[in-house]
Length: 565
Ligand SMILES: Nc1ncnc2c1ncn2[C@@H]1O[C@H](COP(=O)(O)OP(=O)(O)O)[C@@H](O)[C@H]1O
Ligand SMILES: O=C(CO)[C@@H](O)[C@@H](O)COP(=O)(O)O
Image 1: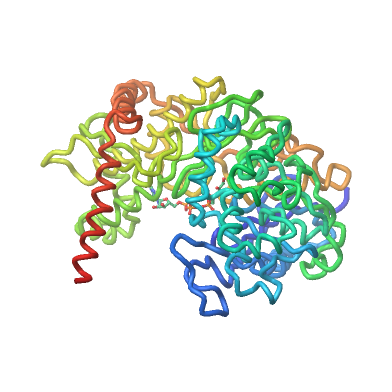
Image 2: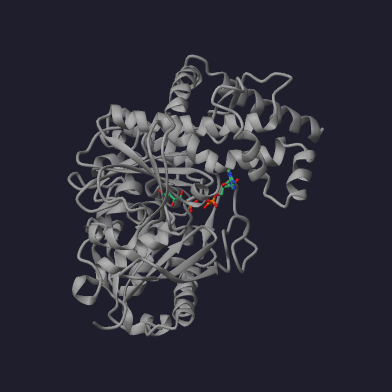
């Protein structure tokens, strides 16, 4: 038996890139290195210029992505002290839709001096929200034409996705649209820099570019209806050569291999997306198991045998998560962020004093106090829409609700009610999938929040009535990317032939939360009330939240006019 074999997973986040070196046989995480992006999130001023960006813009510098390869990869090799010849594969995962215009020679347009001063030549980060007008028009036109693809995306295409972003470029900088040889997801662009081959992955194509394995992209007529100049977008500037997740993109070219400290020819997997790469890393490679990637928000992912239309899902894509299955994605737009808001705005100083006296985190203090209650005891019920509702209502104009407060209500009771509201939100998603014919028998959890609060995880198990298995790895996206790297290398090279084999060996479960039957029964009653509130405020019976937003907007206008005087 030769030396141990390793794979590297690189997770490209919003602020930084993280390389993780993993032992292929066991999935053991040997070394990790994080490189912050020098230009970070560019949302105010274009680097090296005085050019100011407009509201809702969020750009990145593609050279920062390359620096992650040049710095983080040699660092993990150095820290682990292994022979680089034993690294058999490499995979990356990215935020998405993070996209860029690319020149014929493969460079990002913003790397060319003549385009450097044009903000539209740079990478548009997933949270660039300035293409909302284009997204609204796209949705209106698609609905009026009865485009069937809308149903695959819960009825709406997001402004975060690639077509609205490309359309914004065409609207505001037609010269950049013209100059672009093609538009690419950053995950494919970085993979191309490593392999020298332009290979597009089925995950971002399916979830972010309205591509379908059988139907392809929307037709020319649809693009023409958006804008006659977009008629040939697919043929001229997108690729229809889409490769399934789990495939090999190519081998590392020698120039890159030298800079990264690896052997030329090392297998590179096709690009992937962070939340989707985390699924096999949580041990999930078959249907019926929904993975919750839990942090500031929750991304819900599940595999299915068939393509079904599920109300309010973010998307369904064949081969989108694991080859051979339909990958479904749904989500809640704020979860950890709601608790963060509560702690920052509604917890009295005396609680912070107690936490600091005991040298514990404020969340731990609240968890301890809130754990003393049984479901229903506080008389509170909340709706988890502090940042709108992603699934199943797909409505960013919905806002939060707290019901049942009295003069005796305590902060920990509200904290618990907010956690329960997010658990009910997840249950609504689970129920909607099951009703649409996509089975869900178990929940899996990964992401920071899944390992931070036991009470929260037990509430999720009790509110859904489902067992929850928590992944051991705290870096599931990077682990998933490394697993796909090992699959790209293949068994003969010391890796795996399939992601199923890799998942069996490289992942593990840290903890299982089992529903408590008494609490399940109590939460059933509360969930019935949640559903009534959810439908009342969310499905048009009372649009008070939207009216309040309108009043707020008008009041702000009036106030600013008064201040101008
Ligand atoms: N003990 C806790 N209980 C509940 N929420 C927490 C706790 N600790 C942190 N949070 C919330 O969880 C989120 C951080 O989760 P994490 O997975 O680390 O972040 P991210 O989504 O950025 O990866 C924050 O929104 C934070 O407010
Ligand atoms: O949209 C997706 C996945 O579909 C994410 O890449 C994007 O929301 C960024 O996620 P993170 O905030 O980096 O977890």
